[in-house]
Image (cartoon, rainbow over all chains, first blue to last red; front, side):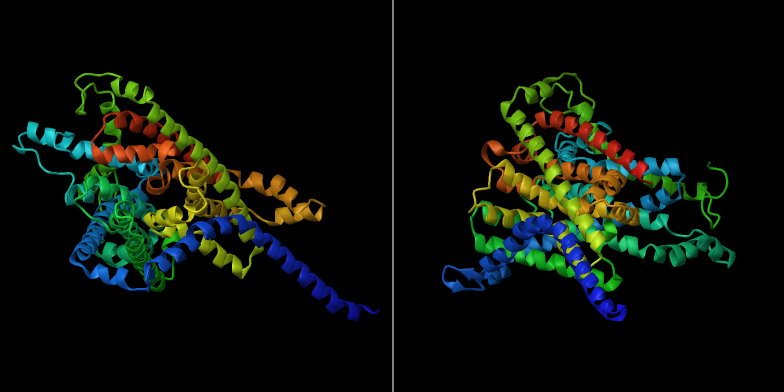
Length: 294
Length: 269
């Protein structure tokens, strides 16, 4: 057998071996895949099925029920809070990330520790802190009354205000972290160049700097918005049952009324809203919010 | 430090003093409320004051003498430790396999594995409750560990993959060309070099499980209630000052975890 004849055979054998190796490597993700598949993908498919298949066969009843005013109110509250929280997070988070990106390394890492600290602290602990601070006889009301700012305690918690304050506190790091990473990578020479060419500081900031931060800001905004839409814990505690979010409606349908049809239909709607917002964002920017955030 | 212009466009520090003040307030907003709980937890009164008029360990005694709180803490730490092991091993294996294989299918698999991060937790909780019911996994430690691992796997995958990017996989090839098997090469060459990423990932997995509320609320009943589940239920009914003591202990624990993770990150750079 000559060398020329052996070559294609060797090549095929090598390719076969490479494919086998690749399959072997991919199979290392099998345990993770089985876990996520059996606890995320299958149950969600099942929920979808439950939402359209009742005792008397196929039905859209679970979805048509959502046209009822009480559901509409929940949906409006959910979006109102998500928009409000996202807006406040931008107003508070943008300056913080901006200053952070310009500080010296030591001050910057101190500032980032302050942003990471809430991130690592239990969600419940932080929500509890706001409950204690904002309640009728809480710290804020006591102080305001001692200073003579108000005569009677303000109603700060178990309502929309308290929910919004608590949610901003939870969501702010999600906006600041990707934005900070983005701003850190900006070449500041560009600002100098703009200045040399005669742009005023304000103009250089709005026309050069801000557009360069769109990707980080976008990732943060979409993360905050999507997380707010599906948020349960903080609104449930700080809203005191009066502020109804979509996620709470799901929990209530299931735990209180044991109505799987309603719970699953609400869940499907939440999932569709979340995924379509993420999909639209990915289409617009060519990036994924999940990878941009970490 | 305050001499000279603050930015490249010659804006001075004084001109943007308002910006510094605003940032100071935001930092206070971020850190202040949580830290205020610490002194308040040493108050002797039923209505927590700041600063406390009378200091005492009353609420710490209440916590440590309560069998229910102690049991819930034990369940939480047990579940978190096991979740850490499961998620880190399973997630690191997946991150390694997907990174080294460089296959197109690998991209789709990693997107799939990060799905639990995108899907609202309430939906995961309802789905997991639904699938645990027929196999009797609700209200068990094993059920909690599996559910929390699913939440932690995306974070492990992302953290370890980031670590793998800084590692030259050719080193492993060299080891293998000299006769090492793939598992051996991974254990002796690759793993030590991505160790800090794997440890960061383990820390994250632990914290995710320890802090998780919504899934535990639905699936962890009876004597398998986690700390966060009990805290949530207690907070929904009334503001129990015992929670201030528990919160302070948890804050201390979080600070410790944060410092360790920062240390690991610094070593990684």
